[in-house]
Length: 77
Image (cartoon, rainbow, N blue to C red):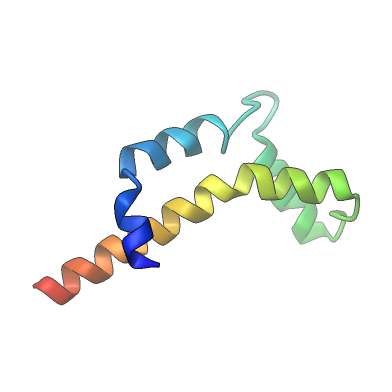
């Protein structure tokens, strides 16, 4: 899995987070709205769950990539 994330450019993930991960930008990003719904227990409609997965996936991939980058740096010194 680390090899797969090693092939994905960090820049591409950052751009995906800033575009798809935050779209639409007004009145608030979808991912933020869906996370608030999740915490409140209101995330029950399938379309809302799909929205969270769609807008949250770039962030998840970025965090996994950064984890592997830092683990690799720690191993190599």
